[in-house]
Image (cartoon, rainbow, N blue to C red; front, side, top):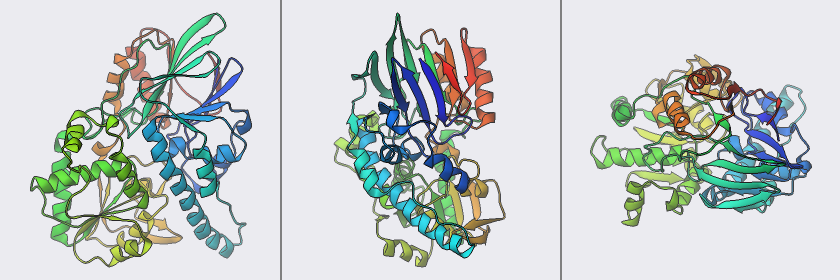
Length: 464
């Protein structure tokens, strides 16, 4: 068997890992790379392989950095099955179409500035119609169900506890005179999640492809996260300002809604208008209620009692553009949750443009931002940033709360690794910046009694 790292190697985005076994080509994930716009466009447009040569895709979860380039893959000639869990398929239905629309919108905006600067126009990677066509190639598989996906290859999904429907990919492979188990962790959740079940620890693993996003850092303790969030909101009320939260539409937004629901219900914050300004987040929240198989026992019981864990009186879900624009005229304190979490596209850009220059306001980051993204520059303390073609001075208060992250931190990744059984002949680390991956590799080598732990290199091929 041969493994090629086509994305998310020494970086966190653009997940694509190509397995060649028994004359078949199996692609694990097909995500969008996020970074400098020009580099991102070229890397996402051009695959390291012929899309028509891929026999099937196995998808770990619906986040765009794992699924977002599927329509382009299909557009360029891929005709095979896309295997996913039921919830991942439902989320991709709305996320891929939304991604296409955002691309079209952003390309129009960028081309206006390109024309002004005498640069050639760009084309979107794919259209909403391409996204819809790609959905016809999905084949869904439940957790813990076994599915033959090729000659000598059997697929099983186990829960990753990262977002709704997220899965670790287990491939039981027979090749020539040997049999072995290959596992791709996907993105591993933290466990103890307010909504989701804990990650399942895989067993009898021979080869492991493992994420390392937070491989060199720890999240803040969960115990104080709600009180800190309450303090941020109480301060905004005192300042008569707004709390702007860039948030991934899927998982992070639903987690925030539930946390705010709890704060209001328990009297930790006064009632304050809370707006979720993202059609995608609104649709994703509705999908969450359709998949109780992914919920932990507490939320499952809450839902079965006919109570909505994702709604409260002062919450308003915003779909239309006119409603979104009206939020900029909203008087007094408010919380606005809007996509995208890395501030690279979507309505959050307009909220930043309108609020980042006012010291009464707070920008609250609740998750990871990749290098070279707008969100990362703001998080890192930039005094001024370009937003939609114009430079804006950063005067709003910046707060960061990584405890809302859906990714396991360093200690949690090590604990996950310790629980895995099997020979573990080889471990490759992906989905991490170089320092994160190298740090985790060093820690795992101390834990590992056999085989090797290495950091995957982009475009590199290894024999298994």
